[in-house]
Length: 111
Image 1 (cartoon, rainbow, N blue to C red):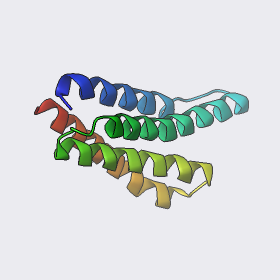
Image 2: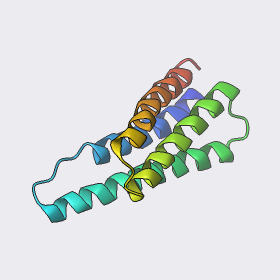
Image 3: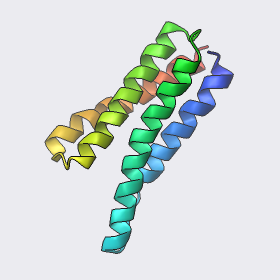
Image 4: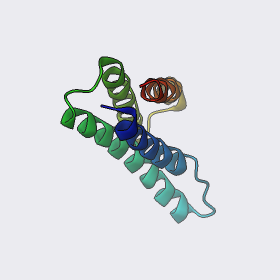
């Protein structure tokens, strides 16, 4: 998997996750919509990365490992949010997702 093919996929997933997990809403209904979109971005983004990686079996090991780590972490965040996990459960996954994202971007840019 070359930088030019994987970097845009990584960026699109990261943008969707960041946009949908940092929104602030003014009403209860809007808050529920924001929460639903955040969960969708996390679970869907992880699935998207996993599927793109599975479709490209020639991906270098460093990119494959970084993509799998990020995909698994953000999907776990999404599942935890659906289960209303407390902050002490979610915080480590949030930190790990930021580290995984940086690792993946670094791997893709070094190609």
